Image (cartoon, rainbow, N blue to C red; front, side, top):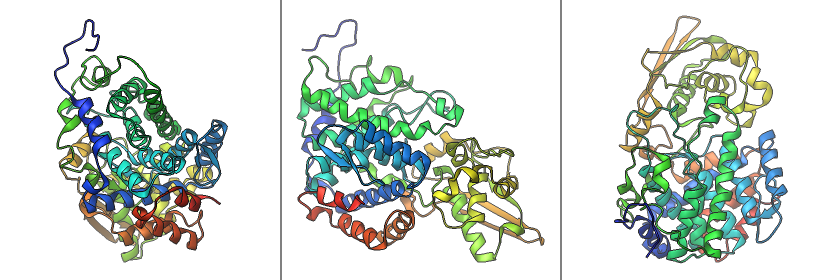
Length: 471
């Protein structure tokens, strides 16, 4: 019996149920389409990380990983191709995965930036099989999503009131690490407790400042996720049931918890299938607008010189900022639809060059960004988009481009390529991966990596695959 002074009696078993699901799930229990989605997400996430090669913040992430990277077991640091400790490789690679804002988006954040780098680092270091790796990825998504939904914000939430996706990101790393490091049920239960303790109190400082620190948060949560697992494996007394004790995790996360989400349809409804991927290195809220604009440019011969005005309907709150003097950070630019559309119009092939420091103050980009207008006075809120997403919907976006010769071209879209209801095929992912990695990998190496991930279950030791990510 646990010692619980001045606390409510425990009447649920959410924590232990999740723990048993993680230790008990077999690769053979996972539907083939779920396995396929795990492969697709892994490829897409690695591509998003490699796309950041050459960016100053990517170099900083790699140096950070190597600086803290002494110790064994070892794992590969992406982009650089060197090695660091398993924990530090996960730290660096998780930062890299988020830099371009080109990875996935779930109902509650960007789990792939934690799940994929952590699972690959631990699987490589511990020489796990492809089937074990895939199982850990699926588990990461299923548990992260439910834990996050249990403390989802109230209906009237907006981005300024202290709710942040980086808070529960730790569980995206903790779960696959726990499975691959073979914790038993009680150890896993305690690992969740360590994770809840290390989960930061909601803070949106990076949203207020638009600092690139937000990318580092993914690496910090990956590091802490693995450390939580190792701490539980080392042993601790009286540290059970964090998701069942109302004085634990939920108390400091939200005033409107929904604990039934911890185990809702666990093992029956696979939430990884509802995750969307991004076709463009831009925020989730901008994907439709980017896709439509590209189509309008291609089919109507529109150029930067002929654009008179671009109207977005409906605009997304907090995403229409225009900075006449230039953007102060990568993050500020990534959250500005006017900047992103201007970058697309001037350079239709996405890549890190969109975010070179000089581009943030480029006069041609700023002039085009100033021509992007909101099509109505009532922007759709970010919280509304998330609620729609949870219900399988996505707001329809209409882009209208007026040209200097009096032309007007308009198109609408709801489910862009990469949305859960319009998901990429393998061929789509392969094309996107080659685009993402064109400056980081030779074409032959890219094909080798793709072939390896499509055949992951055939590998008894995935550290062989990690060699493909080395220089």
